[in-house]
Length: 131
Image 1 (spheres, rainbow, N blue to C red):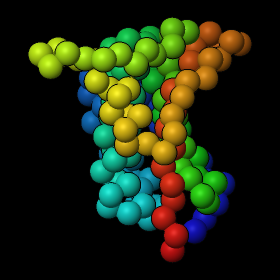
Image 2 (image 1 turned 90 degrees about the vertical axis):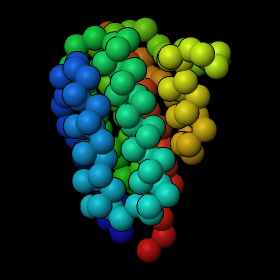
Image 3 (image 1 turned 180 degrees about the horizontal axis):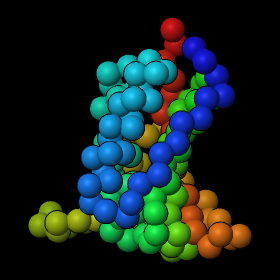
Image 4 (image 1 turned 30 degrees about the vertical axis):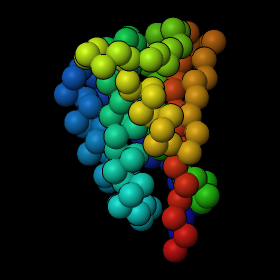
């Protein structure tokens, strides 16, 4: 298993970027050999974070995947300084479940502010399968 690998993609702040992010995730998962379970969970979590960046963020969306050998960390950065808020969606709400989904499927997740650039990076991690 290769360690300390970094994969990156820049996306427009557009709804079609969610599909491009999923394709990026599949390429990374193939490259590092993620299990089918982690592929499904990770693709879902990344889709949610990119959707949030497109809907609530600003500027281009930068997606980075880092493999340190033990975990994959997927980061979604945008130019908005506003941190995401996890909320409790009501049954008939059409939105508000994204971060709850990320929290449920990821090993860990969080948000880092980029004070110098004025934006933020929302991330999640998945364990890398032993091979």
